[in-house]
Amino acid sequence: PLSCHAFTRLPVLSKQTRKSLLRHPKIQDAAAALAAAYIQFVYSTTRWQIMGEEVPRALLEDGKPFILCFWHNRLLMMPTAWKRFSTPMHMLISQHRDGQLIAKAVRRHQIGTIAGSGRNPEKAKDKGGL
Picture 1 (cartoon, helix red, strand yellow):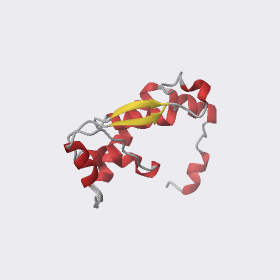
Picture 2 (cartoon, rainbow, N blue to C red):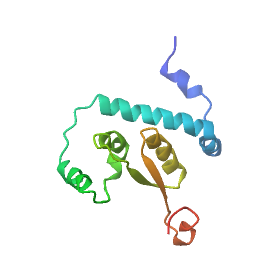
Picture 3 (cartoon, rainbow, N blue to C red):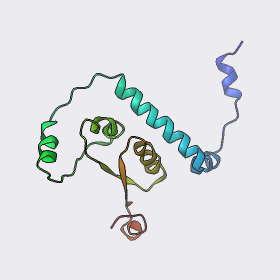
Picture 4 (spheres, rainbow, N blue to C red):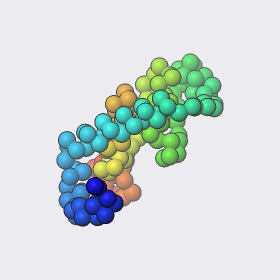
């Protein structure tokens, strides 16, 4: 029989090995596919209350551009929440490895991405930002 103690004997990957694996394109693609599926699952199985929808809808109807801002903890649900509007959306996402994983996941929900810059202004121009 399998016990909890059996898992303590599993080999642990070093931090460098984990980072190396996460940099592999096929691993990133698989993780992005899982994240996209998770986003759809959560959206489909959760009861949502949409508040303030009339504001972006009015701007869209008037043909006015706008910037939609939201907190990080809302990031994963934005692609599915935006589907109620029939207009393209682009997200500003970090060039960091974590950000690129998120970018790949939201692209699967037809969300365009814009590469953002990091904290270092000297390197910002090399990362897609100014």
